[in-house]
Length: 235
Length: 339
Image (cartoon, rainbow over all chains, first blue to last red; front, side, top):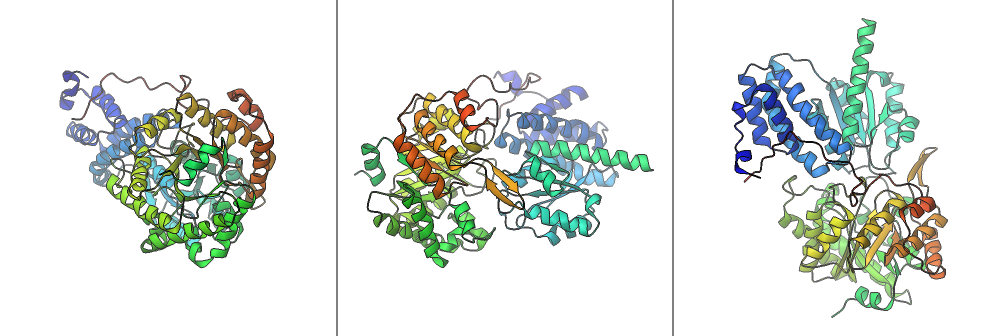
């Protein structure tokens, strides 16, 4: 690594170069650099929404793809998510102020009886990395905790996680309750966790099983887009 | 001074470990979300039955009911202040069972992950992790464990912290990691990487290897990876009894005793010295494994093709130890280094 490579002046880069550099800096988990770049783009008149979607989400998509493909692993993803969070902290109040469109909101938690939360935390971080708002209910959630939060938060997506074969059937309890109350189709229901598989996801009536955090993000994006299209078609 | 497991390893060229703890306890009525470790005090008879199941099925080594016995895991059940006592009980019940076995049976004090992510990515410092493992190790030692058994670890930093905790307790130890993500641990460590890590530790384990993960095939590929990395240290193979399947409202593992018997023989041929099961492995599986290990002559190490033919496909094309893995992303060129 030669000295000149250590001396990139972010403010000297043009917009395209700077966004490319942000992709790299996210990939390398460099939080301070991301914060600096976000501020530079704001000063150049970029809207908060453009910075989020074009620079940050764009960069995190690359991280997510490489995680999915087994090139990056959890430590790198955590560092990248941390850098993203630095940028988001600056953008969040500005996004609200400017009334930027919402990408989507997810309520997430491990199911009743399950206290294993690393996978759930990863999904939460990656979803935030993709620009979603995430409401984390933590561990050990009963039906009511999920349903109350979905309503109170006006969420689009319910994410349930279980690591134990003994707790995963509880996901069906939650989905069945949603059906009974007639609200099942108001939400996108995604499930995940080590012992699950697609077959299980279908059997319990979830919209999708997500193999890992990267797949969760892609699936969430796809379903949100589908819903927007359906609503547009109805309108 | 050699410990009981070290002595046993000198006289035998393979040993059988135990099977599932969680699966067995759930079958005995443990409720999801409850801490199994509390049963060491509430239901010692059931824990005795758990251990005895493995011993009667022919296990040379069994693990104590203390997987979630670190302070950070017990805290989820407001039992963190009972850490020492619960671990001591777990080992003491084991000591009783082992002493009545009529042959040498090793009581291995199970120590699972703290569940926290280590610095710099997460909040858990090396010092605090060492302290937690040390506290648990002292309880297990004082209860009469022959050896400590660190398992299902993902992060190299946590494995090293556990080693240090065992050293502070003055105990020999074994340590396995869970290779469940594209043939690596969740934190990206390969079988070769773990071998390198083990040999760099100050307090090296008596044996190292893999447990849990994704099915028997993946586990055997990992064992081949340990061997290819050139370590002379005994290798441990503790794989799950197949893959969990959801069937009419409940879960069962699809690995039959016959399949686990084949896995056990193949694990030995692949170079493992200590062979056992993990989730879904019942005493029936263990009996079949023991019989196969006793009656089947050793063969050459299986090839990857032979493994998939006998036990099913791998979860990923590569496990990161060959050049067939996915290529790294083309970068725009510059990469900065933080001082």
